[in-house]
Image (tube, rainbow, N blue to C red; front, side):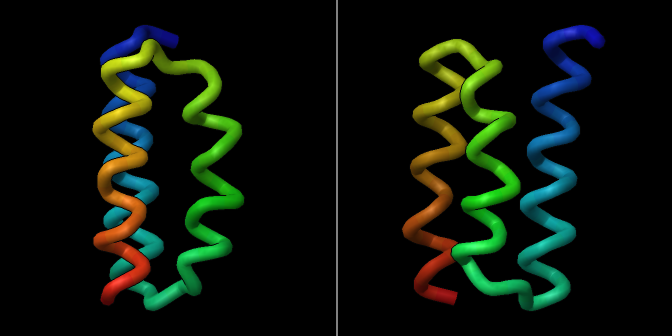
Length: 56
């Protein structure tokens, strides 16, 4: 699995779960294992989206 594929997957997961109105805890729970595999920049980008999800 290429690094770009992992990033695209994370974006897809966030859009899918936000669109389906899943609770932010479930989004975090599913996303967290993916975050561990990313470099620090990708982690910061995804973690920055978490407060936005919680405010929806």
